[in-house]
Image 1 (tube, helix red, strand yellow):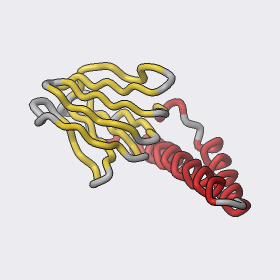
Image 2 (cartoon, helix red, strand yellow):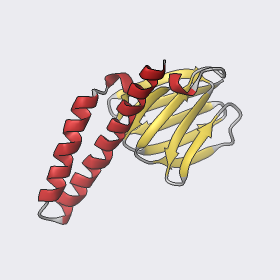
Image 3 (cartoon, one colour):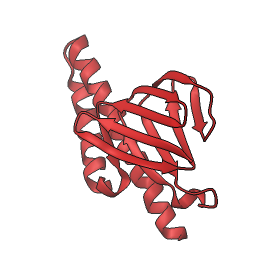
Length: 143
């Protein structure tokens, strides 16, 4: 087992021993399991998938939408530090859709580069939340 800690500005979102964690990085997804080599990397906005036990099915993995941050693997500890992290159980698909629509509208109305960048950042965050909500919905249908 590897100890996985997910820490956001709001505090510790997850801190448990798990079998595997799949993380979004700038170079693509990586899987971290026990005995992983030491690593420091950048997490991009995306989905973290947590497999608690070796025999857990893919559709039973715990999911988190993250805004990006820092990844550190040292010994049998994986620590991910992010600004925002939301567990799939905390995400309402309807609210995420509405936020995504508002973010797209903000981008279309942006008058300067700062506003455009802020709107794009909001679009990125809300699209990840929508992705997690969609994965959760489809796994509930299969289960």
